[in-house]
Amino acid sequence: MTPVQRATTPDAARPMVEAVAVSKRFGGNEVLTSISLRVERGQVMCVIGPSGSGKSTFLRCINHLEVVDAGRLYVDGELVGYRERGDKLYELKPAEAARQRRDIGMVFQHFNLFPHMTALENIAEAPTTVKGMSRRDALERGRDLLARVGLASHAGHYPSQLSGGQQQRVAIARALAMDPKLMLFDEPTSALDPELVGEVLDVMRELADTGMTMVVVTHEMGFAREVGDAMVFLDGGVVVESGAPRELLANPQHERTKAFLSKVL
Image 1 (tube, rainbow, N blue to C red):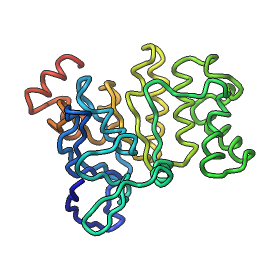
Image 2 (image 1 turned 135 degrees about the vertical axis):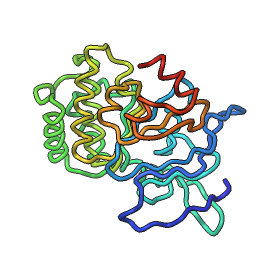
Image 3 (image 1 turned 180 degrees about the vertical axis):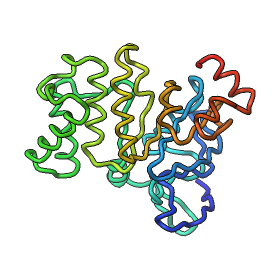
Image 4 (image 1 turned 90 degrees about the vertical axis):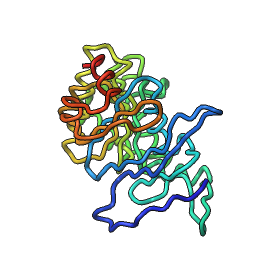
């Protein structure tokens, strides 16, 4: 990877996420092309775009689940997935990358809960195995988080006993159990029945109200308009347009953005 120059900033002004000319290929297919953007601290950025536009890939690059092929990604000022020596970048060892990743919570489209564990056990697992928290403290923390997402009475339920919306709320609680500085949401409501979407979005609204920095890949335009601070429209692996959600949704400037929004609004 060729290093990309980046200006240094004081801690207080440093964005939570900064992408500098990020590109990603799968074989001969370039799915992200020179993506540059910033997510400020406490900001909710909504990423929209058609299927195959690179939204989920970009999200996965932020926590190094996918390795970028060019450019740089920083979270809280720290280079993601690499160490810099002189003018060269070296990929971190898996254990070092995992250490970075534990500060970044991610909620996937399909929940990814452990089916053999109860809701409470799913939440307590990572704090005990990754952070070394005592089992007792992890379970207490898990109960608090279940209450926070409205599932205090479901601690002993297994995923198969929960609705899709309940499973996704457990998944959010599981991510929060690691006390992340950043939360990533990859279309968290797209696998849900329509009547279950609201309960998940309500939890996300509450989380945004607490000041959590969030990057949300979503097709829920009402949520983006109401809760989002910034919006990016991706198509063909490039940032076509960006701006404040209300302004971008009401008055898109690019013809491609207009065409996309005409089909989803």
